[in-house]
Picture 1 (cartoon, rainbow over the protein chains, first blue to last red):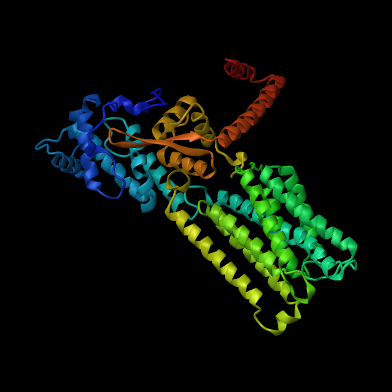
Picture 2: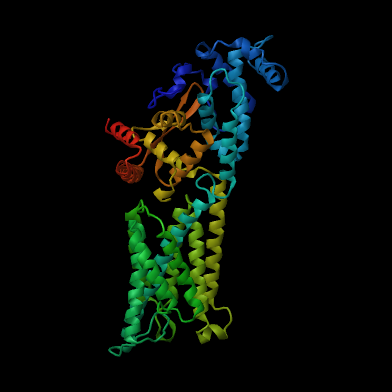
Length: 409
Length: 123
């Protein structure tokens, strides 16, 4: 088996695969359909390439009673060979049928995409006289089946799925918070400038008043979120670690714009995700240009909406930018989540974080307290519900349509 | 994407097998067996678990499909990102091996093994 032509037909050429089989033996699109027909096809295919098979018909046909001989007889009937079954041909047909049954361990959707291909590899790997599936191969398929069915599919073991999710949460979370804190604060300051003229009121996006020093800290905090975001994209592990811990300190000290102690929890969650991402080597993002283009797009949206939006009490229109950022982040995540569920899940997590933060801060708005469920809060809740639905859909889709990255697209 | 630290030896071997060009599943099994001197015999479930994972990480893509003697074959090839990741892994492993061999020489034991390994590497 070893040493065969790797780049071309591989070792399967040993059994005469250079000769093209007839059209009836070509695999069909569906693995499920034509189960018996495919066993018959295998018998015919085997017959065509039978000259290369081992001449052990005696040992094959006299393998005794039981299910093996019954299936040999059945296969012989299918291939139109009456009487004593032809060993070499039927050995391949029987083995193929048994491997096909072993592949039934895998989920139906996965089989539909991978079944024929995996069956071909199993048959290519088998010695010509082999009649029963190798136990080690069956166990391997069973293990693979568990991976595929385990919610994260065959893409990764559960423990390995946590890291991509952490990274996605960290990226989306830092993207959101960097704009919420840094750009938002800047625009809030600019808005107040516009209203009060030279009487600069150091209030943030929510109208919270700060000293100049506090405002400067807010800007630094915003830049740290942005820095962590960029460091993760560029795969700079050391920077990610350092920035992660700095962000924890900043978030815990309530200088990131949070107005209540509870409101520091969402930034802390994102900071923890950043630290978790930095615990191991980080591969640079594959589509750096796309990420930074998304960054620029989100920035443009925020600037435009915040500049022209109208807020109450002379405050900047905080709802507009937040919704715009959330929509942009959700759109990016949805595009990513179309192939990778962790992005959709991360969008729901970050959306939840944003929603909690806004809801907690909302308690400090008198109009929010007096009028019950504020339309803005309702909007946030609806948005989060949509994100959760998208995440659930992405998980279900990923479970059913493995492997998406190679074949499904 | 998983860090290279969590990448298994089998995954490393699969990536290495694909450096020279696209291979189908059975071709990968053969090439890995050859590269490992027969020590690694990939099972089909293991192979496709790795292929799914690597493709999910953007390290592999489908190159083409062929039907040979009624059997579907899909050829996989490395992405540029995979070549970069593999190069980093290989350099790290080489550095670790170099340190280990140097310490073995300094210890004065296992010199034959160390020399043999070095000469093999040189060859």
